[in-house]
Image 1 (cartoon, one colour):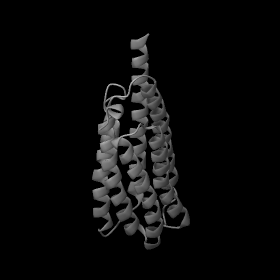
Image 2: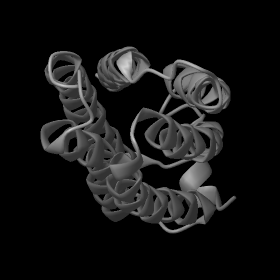
Image 3: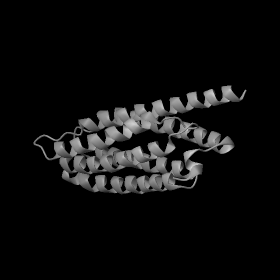
Image 4: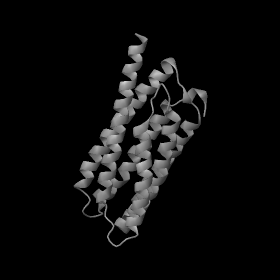
Length: 196
């Protein structure tokens, strides 16, 4: 881990906090909106449902791209780039899996949740520090994504796979992103108070 990534200082740290706050808040709100729309649109795995299923990892891919551009050089940045590529591939795979129905979609979504959750934990661990805080919402969200991905693959192999769980997943992820944004905002105010 580079020193710059672990302990950003001065203007660079303030800029990174501000970028992350906006990114996490936008990402969280988009996830919750997606969950609400998907909850009412997935009774059948039709063109609308498949389109929404493809859009969700693409939101993550775009978020990763924005995060990558705002993150200083270092191993954390490489993990973010990996997650962006992974999410793009997941969107393509989910689009293809949609033709096979709920079970293949759950398998692909579950596999993506496992790997991207692990990547999120790695990024959260590397962002921990005095400038960006403890990152516990990011760590919890990533850990839950990893575990939920395993359960999705178990459900997909069962008799009655259902995509209902994906709205819950997106809502939970969105809430954790919003919490992380609020904590970054609180951290920014705390640091400003100390310097005044």
